[in-house]
View 1 (cartoon, rainbow, N blue to C red):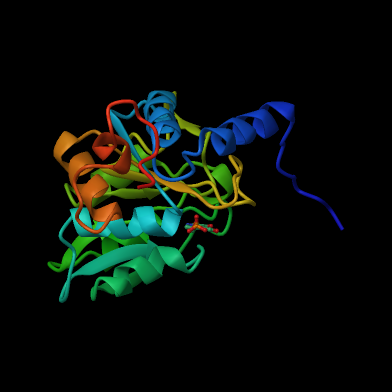
View 2: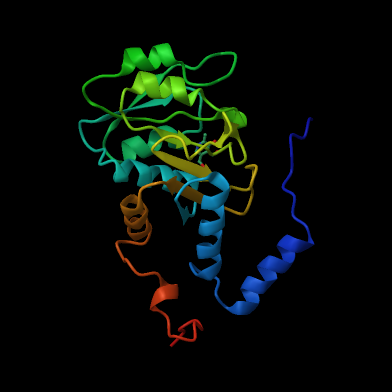
Length: 224
Ligand SMILES: Cc1ncc(COP(=O)(O)O)c(C=O)c1O
């Protein structure tokens, strides 16, 4: 067996988790907000919204674009199932475009063939951290929104820019087997403040003020 990688968890991570547990703030709170700020800076996006998985981020991305019944979204044939599932969750049709057998990136000629009047988004996957040629894809897309599936690609750069900041929306996974690993986790990156706000509302059942903001001035968890 060849072990590709294993998560690197040292004393720093153990201390950080212990600090959170001691604080009593184990839900959506200040650490999530800090992570969102720092991750957005790292990726070079204006906003990052933390969620529990890349699947949730992709689902929110589809919702932000208003994709629904009667619409089509182009996804690659080689990916994890959730790239296509999120399209179906939202009653739209996933349309599969082939991948380049050498790079596993979505095949731009096939994308061109699959675009119809109903196409509302394209989801390229940066497979195994290898960036798709986003400039060329944008040209083929001709203004159709691009949702970057960066589940494998935290840390990957395309022409000097971090992936996830180049298309319209970037979706990341921090699942245990990903290159930035936690138990489960994900983030959505956007440069659009309204989308970021809407994603924050949608991640929590439409509530527009987080528990941290709603809690008493001394910011102790309001257990009462
Ligand atoms: C390409 C791709 N997209 C999306 C996902 C979903 O990520 P998550 O497990 O965080 O929902 C995965 C997970 O393996 C993936 O490989």
